[in-house]
Structures are given as structure tokens and as C-alpha cells.
Image (cartoon, rainbow, N blue to C red; front, side, top):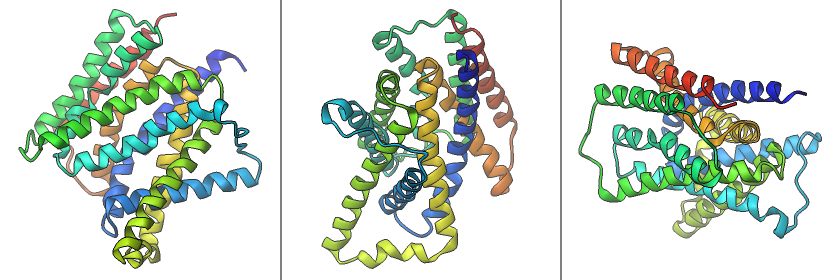
Length: 303
């Protein structure tokens, strides 16, 4: 298979990836009707782990031979994402508003571009930088007209959210290096199983200590919650991790990072279609800026 064809598949995968992540906000809202954020994360990665094991049983997934010296890079990658990222993001959002969090997350492509240039020596042209600025401007434009600053954010919340952005950038940089040693599915399998063990251990120990273990299993009797967990765990966690790792093995990390800006647009469309929310003019203008920026970043990549 030619390299160009693999790169094309990586870009298609990134489009699918951002669509899934964008719609995940809708399913998170549904899931939180039944349980708290930490338990939702636990059930989410339990579903992801079960799907990995099923793929392993049928021979689609092969775990790398466990050799700490060989696998420590993947374990380090897993510590940044999904473990640290989701933990910092969840606790950060408890002390901040969604609009302020969105402004902070919009800085991810810039930090990814800087980190990729510094650590991976990836070079970007002037027009690519313009595309990234346009893309971020589109997100900020939507956030500004959506509600602005609510004043509910504390310094603790801002620091946690900023830390989560740095963790994601670290994931992109490390993933670009580690992806050359393992397949995308191997990396996905290891990080999913580690997240399953860590989040389950934390939740179960907490509930046992407080005598609330029944609250941990209670949401599982609802079909709506089970479908939510399937979407968040299998599609939004396991499948998107595979798509990201595959993309990192084929295209520059700075280009992978800029696709993050499409997810908020998908969230808006999901709200309009699923939650009957209105689509205002600033959604359209901001969306065009984001899409233009992504197209410029890809089209003007260096040969």
C-alpha cells in the first residue's frame, strides 16, 4: 500500500474521529443523568476494555509481548492519555465554565505546533500557521457569542484545564515517536486496559470505603445508560484512540492536533439535530473559519 494512500486513510480517520468526539458531549450529558463523572469514566473504559478483549479473542488485536523495557514507552503514553488527560479535564470542569474551558482547549493546536517543531523537528509553512490561527479564531468566535465568560472559574480550575492541554500535547508528541515501534492497535489496547484497571480500582475502592457500592452498579440497569457507555467506551474511547494512533504514524503531529478544532462544530450540529437547539449566524461563520483553517493546514503542508 502506498504511503499517500495511508495518509489519505489517516485524514479520513481524523474526520471520523472528530465527529465521534464532537457527538460524545451529547452522550456525556445523557450518562450524567444516571451517575457521577468518575463512575461514568469507569464504566466507559470498562466497555472499551471488553471490546478490546473481544477483538483479542477473535484474533484482530494482538497484545505486545510484555517486556517492561520495551513497553514502558506505551505505558508512559497511557499516563498522559487517557489517564491524566481525562482526570485533569473532569476535575477542571468542576471548577470552571464550559466557555472558558473551550477557550483554553482551543490553544491545543498552537501548543502542538510548537511542541512538534521543538521536539520532532516538524516544520510548518507560513500558510499553515495562518490556517491554524483561522481555525482557532473560529472557535473563539463561537465561544464569544455563545455566552462569554461566566465568572465561575477559579484559579484551580484554570490551572487544571491548562494542565490537561499540556498533557494532550505531550500525548501527540510521544505518540508520534512511539507509533514507530508499535502498531496503532497495540498502543490502543495497552492504554485502554491500563485506564480500565486504574479507573475501576479508584471507583470501587472509593465506593467500598463509603459503603456505596450499590450506587456504582445502579446505572447499569438502564438501557439508555448502557447505550451511552457503549458509545463513549467503544467508539469515543477505544476506536478514537486507534484512529489517533494510526494518524500519528502517518502524518505530522501538528496536523493531527489541528483537527481538534472540528469537534466543537460537531457538538453544535449534534445539539441542533438531537437536542433541537437553534443554529445561529455565529455558528456558521465560526464553522467556516475552522474548516478553512483545517483545509489550509493540510493543503499547504511541506512536501
